[in-house]
Image 1 (cartoon, rainbow, N blue to C red):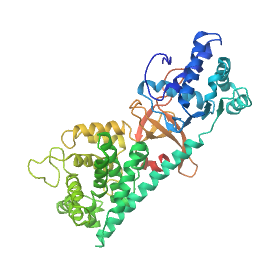
Image 2 (tube, rainbow, N blue to C red; image 1 turned 90 degrees about the vertical axis):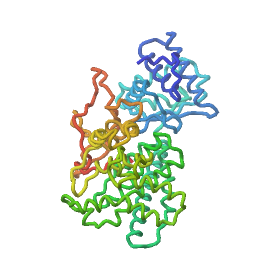
Image 3 (cartoon, rainbow, N blue to C red; image 1 turned 30 degrees about the horizontal axis):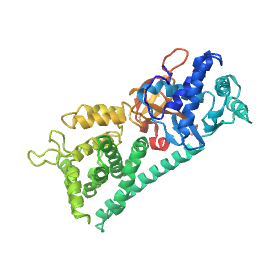
Image 4 (tube, one colour; image 1 turned 90 degrees about the horizontal axis):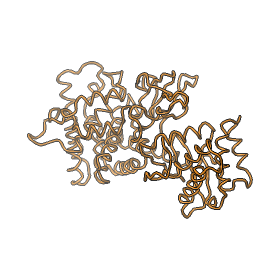
Length: 474
């Protein structure tokens, strides 16, 4: 890939990464007096000074297979993937997590900048590259550069992950509390639930992948409630992708959490029946959207809010062609929120073990099944957005690789090749379970052959291995 930063690309936040990589490559093949080498060093210095702005320094760090520039995730376009992966491989092969670079580099001799690049290139040949680089940077030889460990990034990332886990728990507890109060005929309110939804909306804007990771939680014994939270998350992510604003996202989130409220009125022997339902039992199941609406009508909430959340909840088992259940008013189309819920509801149901289907579909298999209903069961445009959002291999899919490893899909960035997501390698822990390994991109190639380093053999549902993806991803 051409990494010459003088060819304009106008890619935000990439200048420092691009000039850094260009410098590292040019010093490998040219002497210090070479014009291209000196131009690359000058461009690198300018990028640092520009990135510093009014601050004395910036940090460039790697965490979880992603770059962070002074604490902010670096967003790259698709055409820059070779650059990103090249830099990731360069740093990881030397055990380096990142650098703090100071603005006083502006006064440094070009030879000093080139010496820095040569130190980094030579580090790969050292017995302990990280220690060796640290020794080379000690003292006043290179006063504008120092190694950092991604503690700041880790802290921020950890905080966000903890908040995501906590919000999921609060959402689950809120839905369960409402369901249990309805079952016991106690007074019900949704103030806490509305606050939870507001938190979920904020988290969607911060890191969609984390929330999608939480939506992989499966609880066989508490299916109705975990399903409701998962549907809310999937609906929120899809709603954000189609441009819903804050109010719309909050509404679709509330609908997701409450859409199966009516199941609290259905006898457990029907809900948990392992065999085929009788016609009468199935008719009882089909009444749950209407029962959900009936329960919402009784809730002590604003009338305007009721009017907006009742239709989608009523419609979540309707099909795009208006078949399904309950029967709608003749000629009345399914609303946008109802169409969003329908997709999210079916996807989560297919990927969950049920008493009548102990072998759930893997996420990619579920997407294939849903795609067969495009235009008939589901809105084809929304479904296309949903598939693009989740990727060919959605977050939480377990992949068996040709290296003998298993990898858990941790994210499918928009800029990534759809068939080669970022995965977290899982290794046996010796106790019948698994532990986290490295995060790797399946786009990485063997430098010697140019072939992909790891290839997918088949997909599996993580439940087959007793894995809860959220425990590893969030």
